[in-house]
Amino acid sequence: MNGGAFLILTLVLSMAVLLVQRTEAKRRRLAIFLMIVVVFLTIYWANVRELSGEVAFALIAALVLNFLFWLLIGRYNPVGDSDKTIQVLGMDD
Image (cartoon, rainbow, N blue to C red; front, side, top):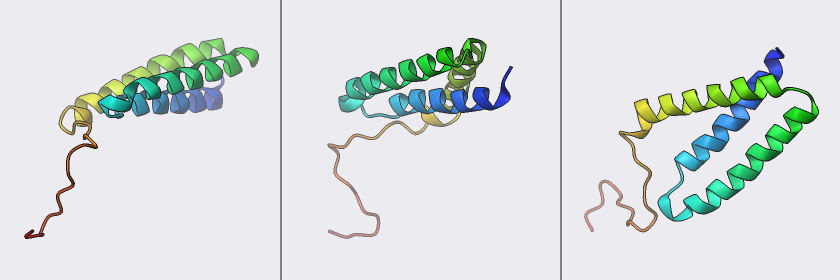
């Protein structure tokens, strides 16, 4: 197993899942489409370099890491909505 390729694949795949997870609801469809393209290009690159075993383990590791992020941080800090007004603390307006 190639450790460097596994680390790079894990980072790329986990960032793709994290971006979809933390995108607001109105833009989620576009984010999902773009991240599917990124994931397919990454998997294609890995298959050209004959790293299919690393891709499988990296995908599992990315999903586990994103589940842990959601479990520890994401549930308590939901994604904001851009339609809400920004409230500045300390302003008496």
